[in-house]
Amino acid sequence: MSPDIYEEALARTWLWFGENFHRYDPEQASFVTWFNNKLKWVIREVIREQAVEQGKRIQPPKNSDGEAIDLTDFFPAPALDHWDETLQEWMDLVQQDPGKQLRNCRMRDYPQINCQTLLLQILTALRDLGEVSWDELAQGMEVNKTALINFCRSRCSSCFRQLFLNISE
Image 1 (cartoon, rainbow, N blue to C red):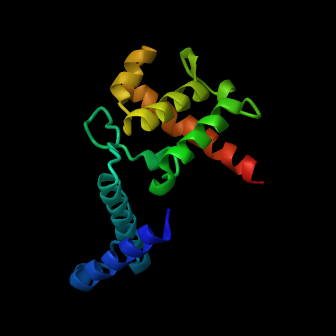
Image 2: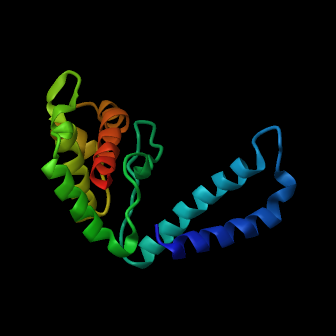
């Protein structure tokens, strides 16, 4: 995340805080948790606004209930000023799969679906379209959309993060 995004979000959060301090309920959460949760949402809002300004379409995928699924549940958010480069770096990293961790992590009952295949399709859709359609991914892989989302969230995202940790060490 760029410092500009954080600074803008922090400034907006402080303004919100000044107007809404009377709503704070210490029995619900600590002050820090309350403030940080709001900051997290404002950061996402600023990122989306900047994406719109820069012509990028960031449409979060939706789950079976129609609720948006935040891609940062799966991936760290790429900096918008390096969107294409970051996605290409991630695609290269996933394709190389140094320890074959992504290739070996398969979806139960669907051995043809592994984390490498799924992550490459997600990253390709983000690069080419700026959005991911879980309906299209699931249909193309002939699997239930909810099962695919759960597989990505529970297994692939952790493998993807571990891949980054191994590279950065």
